[in-house]
Image (tube, rainbow, N blue to C red; front, side, top):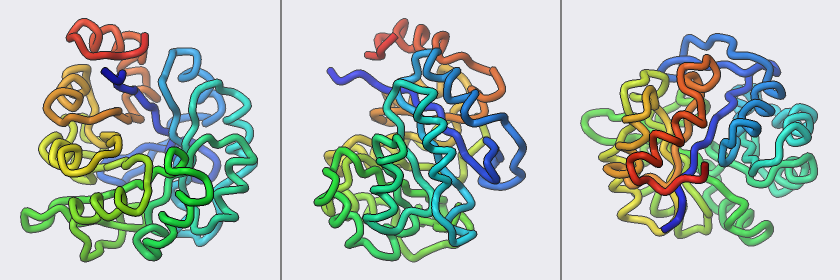
Length: 251
């Protein structure tokens, strides 16, 4: 059985780690390099770094900060935000990223997924999908959740997998920052309909939520931010709890 993964997420704005609720009301959560180093020491399985304002501000991801974070950790490192070309990916990989996450650019140019997978390998390409329920349908949103599309979450997830993505990072905007649990019904459906790993994001607030998303949500990994940044749950304690519930996890 493949082990499940716990992934802290650094949402970066103006060089600082921030966290909000439902993608708004951001507050400062600390220095990204210090936090990254702490999470590596605590045995996080991977780290995700998302430059959340890069696309909206029409600029590239902060390569210097990516390099500093990469130097501080020894765990797999995924970087996203403002990526729209093969050249962008090359810059980030040269600066220490192991994988890249694309979101808005993939929706605007789906062929980009094929190009990146062919050039760098599927294992390097994560497609992030932000979605919320509107009239009982899960609708994909862009630009940090500010712009709704006409795309259905499940149809887009299938297309992403077919185009060569190695992993999907699904964030439920309805659950983001609420600490009320992950969107397990939607997660389970994605996992059943595609054959690549799915990372659950949005709603982790206590160990039970992680247990539920690995069992009921069929997630391969669970991502969280504020509960780790503000010391509400430690990664070692969370992993012990998961192991106690017979969930395969690397301690």
